[in-house]
Amino acid sequence: MNYIQLFPDEHIYSAVIRYWYKSGDMFLTRRHRFKLHDIPFHSFKVKAPLWTDINRVIERYRFSEPDEYLLRLNHTTLPLLLISAEYEDLYKYVLSGKGYRYREARINSDHRWRLCPICFQEEQQRIGIAYWHVSHQLPSLMYCTVHNVRLHTHDSLSVLDNQLPHHVIDISEPILEAEEWERPWQDFIVKLYDKMKTNPQWIQEALTEIKSETQHWHRPENFGRTKHIHSFRREIEADIGFSFDYLTDFTTNTPKDVFNMFWHPEQLFKTRVSPSSVLLGLFWKRDHLKCFEV
Image 1: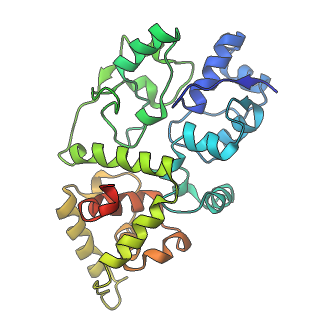
Image 2 (image 1 turned 45 degrees about the horizontal axis):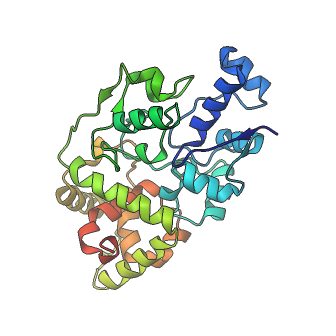
């Protein structure tokens, strides 16, 4: 079994591409390369820590992090999925074919891979090659958390074919802010990711606090009726500053899911609420949760 060394914060797919270049297999056709390595032919998408494609990659190679759970926790965006379910339950549900919305945490449609130009320069000088960082790939993130500079991307980076950062650094451009809500989102998503990566049980602390804060909530009778859902949706949109129409991974059930998350937080892990809905709920009430301040 082939051994692959991972750098700190390096995404699994980045390490595999580096290995293919080192082994000389990158110069084969894509389909031939996948067949040679006994991996299903697929695109290297950034936010898919749980799916059959990446599972086969993990099975095929021996990584420097031998524990599969820690490998996903530290080298994919898995921490953002653990806000909605325990790892074992989430893994089984996604593999059952029913958990499409649980493959990744999504907010908008920009799934391009991102890089920090300063991280790039430092890694080129220190180890001779730059790599794709997991922490640069968080949903709607625009800034490097280390250097506080804008991340760069390019339209060709919707998926990774053969690219490492040095292939695109000269054509990449800074990500531009498009909406007002994206500014507070930066601090929120980084803080949430760091807390869940360091302590995946942090979400339980958050849910305990949510329960104490929302005991006075009144659930309207027949809340499932359209008029109540639309009213609650408008309340959320007014508070967070953007319309659900802007989002790509939300459905008509999202407002109901968010309300239930606060009304009965102890039921969150039992009701199959998508990670994106939990992200929205936590972002909505982030300033009222002390657990975000610690």
